[in-house]
Length: 281
Image (cartoon, rainbow, N blue to C red; front, side, top):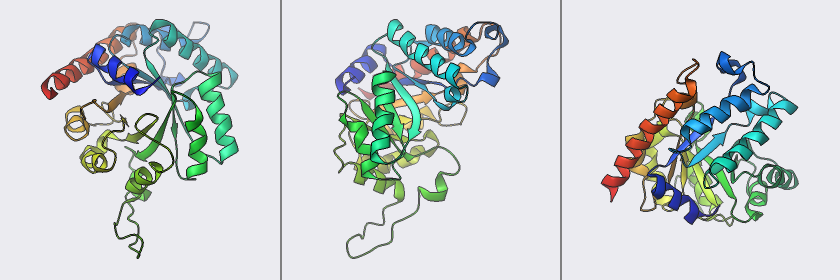
């Protein structure tokens, strides 16, 4: 899926919502547990209830691979079901892979070709040769971890580089990640960055060095991130945001009508996004 496709879908749906399918087996409603594939049945009902309001889904791969072979099957069925329901939806593998080049190539084949995802989240700690294999696939996207929403982000991501004769910028590590990765062949046509909603004020600094890249923004909802703050600092003329909500939508209810409630929560966010887009014109 190319950039124009994503933008057109955002404008068509008046939404830049990404629904995180963090389908934790231990949290599934009892009403799906008697089905042949509880995780897929749960996802199917969430997708049916939310696809009108979202432009992206983001399965968190850990919740599938922890189930072994059956979990991978649930994931494969989920991706195929999304394609069947709405082929314009952007599907992100939240896998956070990051390894040496030949291994990264196999991860890319697994998620882009075998599983048919549009994008994958990648940890850039091992540098250029661990990231560039993911960029060799037409109309597929790399989403680099830049500034995350967890408390541990402060352990490394805000560390400043020491000034040297060749570097007097004092860039923080997350800024170095963004600047350096833009020299690896990444462009706004194939690279996004993860920026947590709980760090919304940092979006202003990030937009100075990545003015045109899309940003995947987790942390709205259950983690306390503010949609208004994210848009205040991060919105661009092309929108430039995919704002993710996971638990706040998919686990808003554990009753038999969990899918109806999820649809209502997704619709609420879509309506807020629609208003923001109207006011931004």
